[in-house]
Image (cartoon, rainbow, N blue to C red):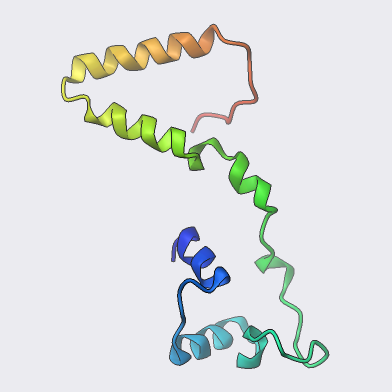
Length: 108
């Protein structure tokens, strides 16, 4: 399941079937009523900390999730000539090396 699918379920843009809801309740070890807003909070067990989501700004701050990054990557791979693509990569790397330093992610 992708992050976008989860967001759609959270906003109510997608619906979830009863059998899937039952399966999820079994996996999370919670009653099916847990997933409904009008549930009595006293009867519903707390979600374990392992299921906590990071703050929304953490997703927005990730440069790999930005539209600009996706467009740049798609454009890069649309360059058919491998030599031209390599030279473009070197230009981008050179420009980045001479720009003011930003917090960078470690390379893998």
